[in-house]
Every structure is written in structure tokens, then in C-alpha cells.
Image 1 (cartoon, rainbow, N blue to C red):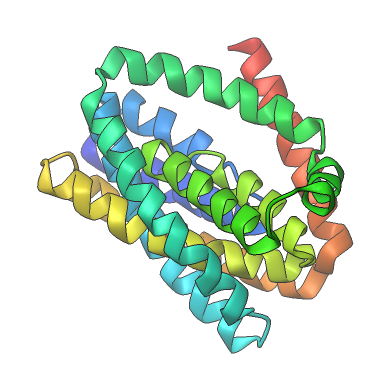
Image 2: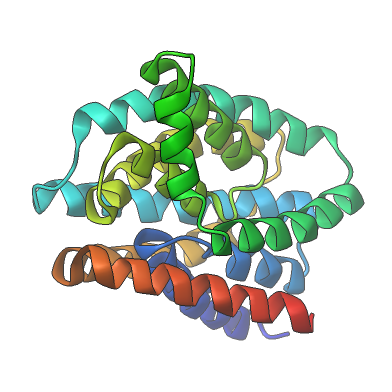
Amino acid sequence: MDQWISFLMLFGTGCLAGILNVVAGGGSFLTLPLLIFLGLPPRLANGTNRVAVLAQNIGAVWGFHRHGVMEWKSALWGALPAAGGAAFGALIALWISDQIFKNVLALLMISITLWTLWNPSRQENDSLRNSRFPKWMVITGGFFIVGVYSGFVQAGVGFLILAVTTMIGLDLVKGNAVKVLVLLASMIISLTIFATQDQVNWLFGIVLGIGNSIGGLIGVRLTILKGHSWIKNIVTVTVILFAIKLFFE
């Protein structure tokens, strides 16, 4: 395949993924398969995708802060345990074989889709109120688990973060703002680990990252303009589309 066609595919898919990642989640369900389709081994695709997600979330954090909706206390509270979890998850991803990673990715895509369709937010709120553990401990543990998942595969982690921010009591606008900072912290750690193991194609990652960054800024603007109810509908539609995509693959 001509390299310029590959770049156009990466840029266009990156734009769409950036919008999805900021507004809801699941954009990496588009970019990871594309990177593998373009010839990268799964482990290298996993590392390369993080360049784009990092670029996207730098712009998104700035965008949410500029609009005054960033809950910095909640975001930092989530970012620290998530960063620790991301290191652990990245090491697991580098340890397993490419074939196992592909099998796990397919299983996770199905599981995340079904889990999100189940709409667990209400269940998690009830669990938080009835928990014998302090609220801070439950939320810190939740963000650590999110970090492990993010470090391992990243795809679909936005849905998990929104579930945790719902537990905190944030609406989907502020929850999305917290999400991008948590992901930024996780990506800094996990990308560093992948890069030290030479598991990043920087050229593909930069082209994809330009698309993701543009899409992320569009996603921030849509989130601010449209609000909670619109985002909830987009999350639902996104999940249904992923379910259909998985069913026919």
C-alpha cells in the first residue's frame, strides 16, 4: 500500500477516534485494528496508538480547562492511582505474546461493549453507598484498575472512567474533563514503557496523533456545547455501533 494512502487513513481515522474518545470512548477500537491492518504487529500497534492518545489528551485537557469545566481536584485524585496502574498494565502487555494480545483484545472489545450496554453506573452508585470501605478507598481503587486496563490495551477505557466519575457524582461534561487528564497521566507512563522497549512506530504515531488531536478538540467543543443529555445519547449510539461491528466480524 502506498505510504501516503496509509497516512491519509491514519489521519482520517485519528480524527474520528479523537472525537469518540473525548465525547464517549472507544476510539482505539478503530485505530488499533487499522494499525494492525497497515502491517504493525499487535504489540507495536498497541505502543504506537498511545502516541496519538497522548497528543489527543494534551489538547483536550487544555480545551476543558479553557472552558472552565475541569474538576482539577477530582482529576488529580484519579490521575495518580491511574498512572501507577498504567505502569503495571503496560508491563503485562509487553510480557504476553502478540497472539494472546489479539485474542484478549477481541474478548475485551466484546466485554466492554456488553458491559456498557448493561449501563452499570446506577449499580456502581448503589455499591459505593453500601460499601464497607471508605469512599476515597473505593474510588482510588477504581482509578487504579482503570489505569491497569489503560496501560494494557487502552481501547474502551473511556467508558470505564466515565463509570468511575459517575460514582464521584460528576455529570458527563465534567466527567469527560476528568477522563482526559486521567488518560493523559496514564499515557505518559505507559508510552514511556513501550518506547523503552522499542515498541513504538513514531512516524505512524505522529500522523495518527495529528488526527486524534484535531478530533479531540472538536470533541471538547461538542461536549461543552451539547451537554450531558447529548453525550449520554452519543455514548449509547457508540456502544450499539461497536456491538454491531463486533457481531459481523
